[in-house]
Image 1: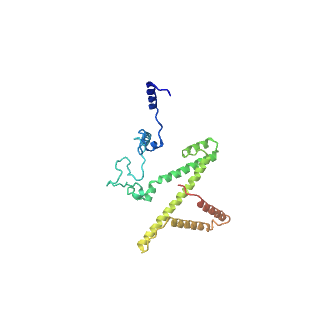
Image 2 (image 1 turned 120 degrees about the horizontal axis):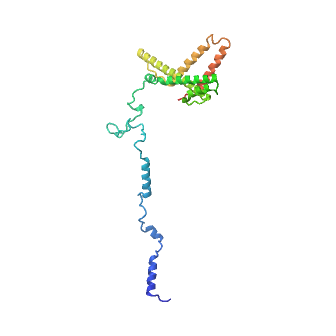
Length: 260
């Protein structure tokens, strides 16, 4: 092998210094940790940016509607959300567990909202008048169009819609009448119990809703039997007609669900 000159030796050493030797397995296990990698347990830059974006998305404007849960005080804009003694328990706003609402007076409530029943009767009257006008003039006439236009504010645009709405109103009126009769029956039973307790030494009896409905059905059946047993109804074929209608009404009362 020929001898290398001094310049060639320097160039060879410089080339070897530039080339890094490969890292062994032992060095990789026990070697130094790269400083560029994030430490364990510390969030890196990407996670910080995502958290900042989420915080911006959750931030609400001053004109946004206020969402109020049922365990916060009635005024959502007050800074004090705890009790008077500043305990950790929030003040409940649910009327069943709060003294802010008071007791429910059903008679006063019905008197205050009696206009709803009047509106219900007026709407039924308007629908009946519109249907009568369409039957007299015909469905494809100007008078029928004007009659349907007068009840368009009830989302009624055709004769079929008006008929369905009238059926729905009739069912609702029957159910409202039944609820009112049940309420009056319950009130009368409670008053009778109070009189018995005041006059005699009997134990108080609390009527359940199931018991009240059972008494109501028994009274309605008694009224129906009394009407069927009368001489005027049972004369000739009228008795069969009324019995048939009574069976039909009984089936309808069982089938029709109560509307909210």
